[in-house]
Length: 93
Image (cartoon, rainbow, N blue to C red; front, side, top):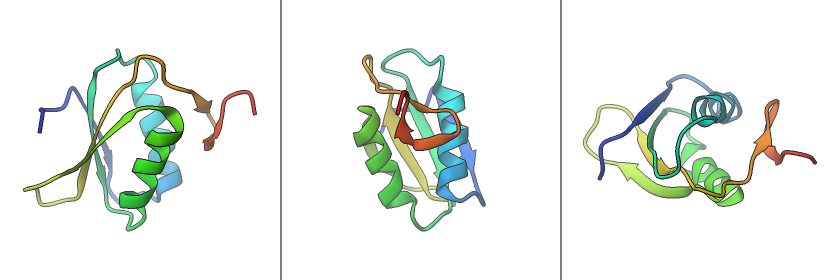
């Protein structure tokens, strides 16, 4: 797995709050940027791939070998944006 350019620590956060933090951290990231997300919410293995699918970012999967659950994604060049206050809703909806 490629080393991250950005790491988002969502330890102890529910996925909605984690996605809000993730969205803010990657807002100005260049296409191709590798992001590692530390996520302890049990829903993260389902929510992160679903959010990546919705936004067109590439979900790269779980990063093995750490002491906390870490998931990787790659920023898309033509990603669909979400609302700043609602990460499960596309911007403009």
